[in-house]
Length: 217
Length: 235
Image 1 (cartoon, helix red, strand yellow):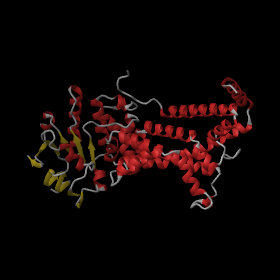
Image 2 (image 1 turned 180 degrees about the vertical axis):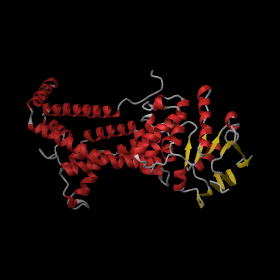
Image 3 (image 1 turned 45 degrees about the horizontal axis):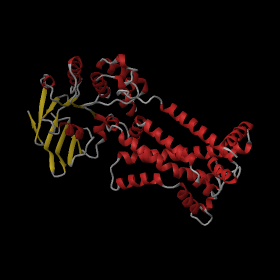
Image 4 (image 1 turned 90 degrees about the vertical axis):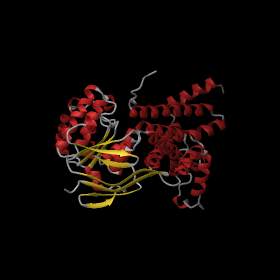
C-alpha cells in the first residue's frame, strides 16, 4: 500500500549536535502512531518539522505521489496536515470563532461554516462554550476546543503534541475518548506522548526516538 | 502678569471663542492626525515584519529603530527643511512652510515610536499565536492580522505614544511650517511665540487645549483598547 506520507533523509542539526538522522519514515493512511522517547529526545521538534513550524537541515517528503523538499513547506501539506500544540493557545475572540478559524482561513463557504463548526463542537462536547471567552476555559476544555479546531478541517494527518499532558481525571478521560474517533473517521494521527492509556489504545503503532534515530515497533 | 491673572485671561479667551486661537487648534489637530494616519500602517507592518522574521542585520535594524526614538525633533526638522527647500531634492513639491510639510515631519517623528513599540509588542507575544494561525492554513496576511489582533493593546500603546510625541513636538513644526499665522501655526509653535512676546494668557489657553486634547485622544484610545484581559492575580 502506498503510504500517505513518506519522509526521506530527515536530518536536523543544532550547531555541531545532530538532533535527527532518520533515513525514512512512512505514514500509512488512516493509521495511528504514538511517538515516544525520553524528555528532550526531540518528539515535539520532529512533529513541528513535519507540521512546517520548524526547518530541517535537509529533507524531502513524498505526498500524493509528489516528491518535494520539506522546506519551504509544501502548500499541499499545509492543507492536509494540522499540528496541535501541547498547550494549545486560543485566539482572544470566542470559542466558536476559534473553531471556525481554519475554515475562514481556507476560504470555506460561509453557508456551510456554521454546520461544520456545530458538528465539530458537538463531537468535542463543547457546544455550551460557543460564545465563551477562551481565556476562561480549563485545560481540558482548551484541549478539546483545539482538537475540534483541527478536526473541523478534516485533515488527512493530525500531529498531536502530548494531548493529555497536564490533564488529569475527567478532563484527561474526555480527551482520550476523542482520539479513537478521529482515527475511525479516516485521519492518520501521530501523537507524541508518555500517557500509557494512549499508548495502549488499540491499533496504535509505536515510533520511538532515541539518540536522534527513530525505531519503528 | 501673574500666573493667576494669566490663567483667568486664558479661560476668558477660550470661552470667547477667539477665532485665531481655534484656527491654531484646528491646524494642530489636522496635521497631527494626518501624520499619525499616514505613519501608522507602514510602521505597524514594518514593526510586525521585523519582529517575526530573522534576517541578516536584523539586530542593526532594531538598534537603529530604537535609536531613532531619541532623535531630536529639531534635527528631523532641519533635515526635512533641507530636503524641502527650493534647492533640495524634494523642493519641487513646494511643501516648505505649508501644512503638507508639517504632516511629513509629523510622519517622520511618529514612525520610529510606532515601529519600535509595535516591534516590542509583537516580540513579546506568545509565538504559538502565529504558529496556530499557520498550522490551520492561514495566509501570511491573515497570520499578520491575527497576531496584530492579539498584540492590539501593545499596538494601541504605540499609537498613544506616537500621538503624544507628535502633538507635543515644536522643533520640526517651527522649522518646516514656519509658524505662519492662520496657516502653519500649531499649538506648540504658538505657545513658544506667545511666551516670547509676553502674552502668557494666550500661551496658557493653548496649553489647556493641548492637555485637553491629549486627555481626549488618550481616552478614545483607552476605550478602543477595552478591558485588557489579565487572568492573573490582582494585587
